[in-house]
Image (cartoon, rainbow, N blue to C red; front, side, top):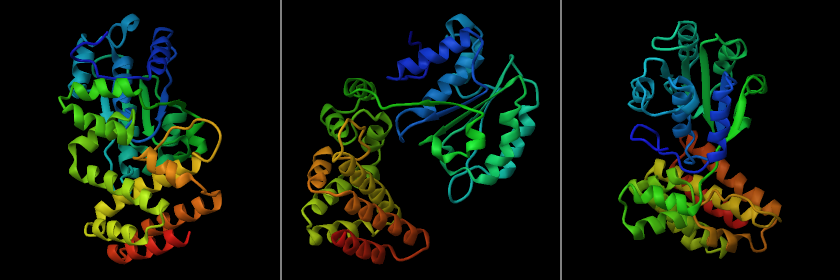
Length: 328
């Protein structure tokens, strides 16, 4: 039942039901990894899970009405700690991990448990993961760790083997529309966002609220269409325009890479979730696309990322990438 204090989680009801059952049976994992594509609600479910762990009413947890749930909903619970990112890769420093290890040994303030959340753990260094290993392997009885990441592969096998990993999926188109309507976006804008990102609520919200994200998605869709047509002039125009802002070029290339991935999987049998921003353009690009050509395109985009990371001129990087994609 939804209450004013409950996170508005759409979809993934089987996952929530499994976790509720674990709480009722007193079998909640001491370390949980929520993995799935960016924008599908992993951090929101991590917050919901923290409420589940700390709720004062085990049979109806998370109730949304007890003191613990209210504090958690307001991000004011003294027994919920969210690790802070640091560094160029937005990981977690070894010092941050050591601080949390020390905190984990301290008894809770309000109840029986403490929850430590590591959001977007994709950039967590090997050193930081190793520093955390002992706490996850032999956690204090009153401590629980929650991680969110794009995939299970970003964590060390030694750390992953001590966790329970659960996938988080985008929601249905209807659920996505319902969530966006509650935010009072215009109907036409909602349809445009859903056409770009399907049931990924987070990506749709970013598209509707951030002009830079909208431009990147629109440009990546146009680029994939131009790539399908081998229209070098249009590709160069779009890439060099995006290169006026290095961060904007990076956003655009991330989505273009997702478009290439979608085009590649569309050549295979079976049903696959799409990660890009224009299904029609991906379908056109997939026509006649070979695995080798797809890998060359992906490699060219990854090389562009490496050049940008190495402070090569964004315009020069865009020009070189255009040539590489046309030759792929």
